[in-house]
Amino acid sequence: MVDVLLGLQWGDEGKGKIVDYFAKDYGVIARFQGGPNAGHTLYVNDTKVVLHQIPSGVFHDNVINLIGNGVVLDPVTLKRECDTVASFGIDLKKNLFISERTHLILPTHRALDKAAELSKGSQKIGSTLKGISPAYMDKTGRNGLRVGDLLDKNFTTAYIKLRLKHQKLLDNFAFTEDISSWEEEFFEALEFLKELNIVNGEYFINKQIAAGKRVLAEGAQGSMLDIDFGTFPFVTSSNTISAGVCSGLGIAPQKIRDVIGVTKAYCTRVGSGPFPTELEDATGELLRSTGNEFGATTGRPRRCGWIDLVALNFACMINGVTKIVMTKADVLDAFPDLQVCTSYKIGDEETKEIPFRLDRRQPVPVYQSFAGWNTNTSGIRNFEGLPGTMKTYVDFINKYLGVPVHYISNGPGRDQIIQAPIA
Ligand code: GDP
Ligand code: IMO
Ligand code: MG
Image (cartoon, rainbow, N blue to C red; front, side):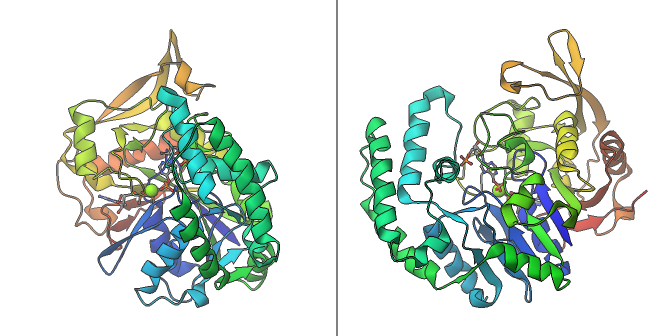
């Protein structure tokens, strides 16, 4: 039995914290897509940790963490992260496993990402520059190198061949940066990677399921960054939605039970691309400062705005969301009134649907106003204690989406989460 937990917006919904919270109920936590573009924050004994490659269940005893075949893996980031995790006394030999089909991010993928973004000028995607798009291009182009290839005696030859190909592309971009130090640390990290548990991921996970272990598939990025259904071309290069779980881990669709969607009580986006409810004013600034909205991977300020139910409804539809977790409700504590986007006005028409090429349509959000709660909610530990105005806000979202909000998160800490009664 497999449950899925993924982001319903443009990433950074708080997936890391929520996976860490749920991890004790699962035997396996598995990443199925994305790479070190992800930054999942959680707290271990009050110490903040940001995970990029390792699943967010790694700090729990008796939980297996699997990096699935759908992920793209940067060995350098992984090694650094393993060192951090090991410093908490975690034995990675016991609880971290990597699929041999996982594609590797090479130093030249990072260089290509940078060169491609530079060449796009004002049209840049706002990539995290971690080499994601070039690595997935080599996967679909059938050129990529995989973790299992590391154990092959011809690995270095294959690496050199691919590197030469990349060099030609870099020459075309007139990219001249010296990346020799990147290559040095890459080869060092490969030696480290070879010593980790490299497994046949699809058999590995299916055997865990057959043995009765519960699996939680941990999404990275968010549904609106999905390569097919996101705000293309301002998206990432993988299927971030629930459909990606089957191909990203090698499990059958009928094994999937719940799809847990995580959304902030408002909305953020980092990088370029359309964001209909964005607030480029003092309210947006207040959301950013109160919510500490700065990228966990790149440190960039996140763009902030009101919750967008048109986009959330779309995300619930394509993912088959069965439960919602609403995070960062506490960030709205100090706002006297709140806006909820219920439709878009595009030209003379009002719509509740996401159009093709949102970036070309200039949608104007139509809002419904709600009273704020004007009280500090971060210390509240049960649903009954929450202000009535917050319950009204959540109830409206429940009804609009037709999916229940099961949990409300009211702070970054492990214990700052409240279970809501299901109607
Ligand atoms: P992820 O990529 O979805 O895992 O999210 P990030 O870790 O990139 O960003 C979420 C940020 O919000 C992190 O700094 C979390 O510590 C923080 N966070 C998570 N849940 C809450 C919450 O309920 N309230 C507040 N104030 N912060 C939260
Ligand atoms: P988590 O898992 C927020 C965004 C980038 C850029 C676009 C493409 O922490 O939620 P890429 O590096 O993938 O080529 O960048 O996607 N992006 C994210 N935004 N959270 C993330 O991950 C993201 N991963 C990528 O900012 O706009
Ligand atoms: Mg993040």
